[in-house]
Length: 422
Image (cartoon, rainbow, N blue to C red; front, side):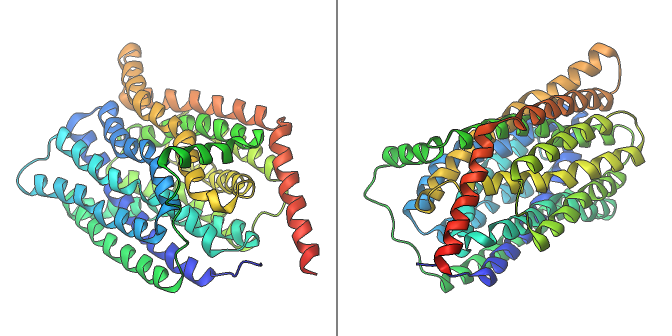
């Protein structure tokens, strides 16, 4: 039976996630600036980012199982709504005095625990709502929402920090959760929930999810590459702020981040309008290689124009890489196992972020001390090395026959379904 498109419902759901991403970006930017100003350490900034990310990683696989067992929209509403509790805690600490580093860490950890429910349910819901032909176009839209925290949030946050402080950013972010929950509730009302897979145990569900991603060697290769890729990209994301703050103000940082993220907006719009229809493997490899080379240029000099230019190229490449990865994996996994599969995929592919957040800040601080340079130049050195390694991984991926086989199989299935419908 042909799947019915619910693209309008997807757009409503996407709108809620766009608002949520903007709010999260405000908090991330504000807390990053706050911590760096208080401590002057890239490692402390990385610690906050690590604790904000680690629960999402560790709980992604159980969250994926829950996404296949229970109503995915309810899980999204719970994840979005309850994650505000951690931010409320940080806000209360700031209102009663200066928030200490450990208090900020506790708050972002609590928020992240509940946020972990979101991603597997969101990705599986996209599969529920759309037809296979709409996946690529929807992937571009999802990339636009993801880019909002880098494109819109820094500009707003940089301006607000000149007239207020981080407390205002936290209050705005807390308010966005309510709108996101409302959008998800409306979407839930318009579609029926799939029967819960409650008979299988959690362990059995994990095994089924593992079998789904391990069935094809190319899928596992992509997951491994994704983990390596997130490690190098994580270094760029966590060290860009201390690198720029070392010689510029938070307002300039906000403008620079927005200019760089415009690259993601431009390419996301292109993909959202036209989509990607072929040569996913080649596009993936080329986009990753150019992203890696742009990281090298990003850290070369303390020149804000050069930083913005190479940052623009870096972010321009990301939606192409993410869209290709999403398509190649999504079209090679059974729809009934999408929730538990995406939970495991999120866990495995994002281990690289944990490595980056746990080591990049320390490496930058140690490089600065060893070479008697500023923390910003130490951060730049780590970014440049990471970019060179990412380019090398992209070159190796281009030669993978197993990954190309995924694209051939997916194209064959689409062709077969087209003939059946005629």
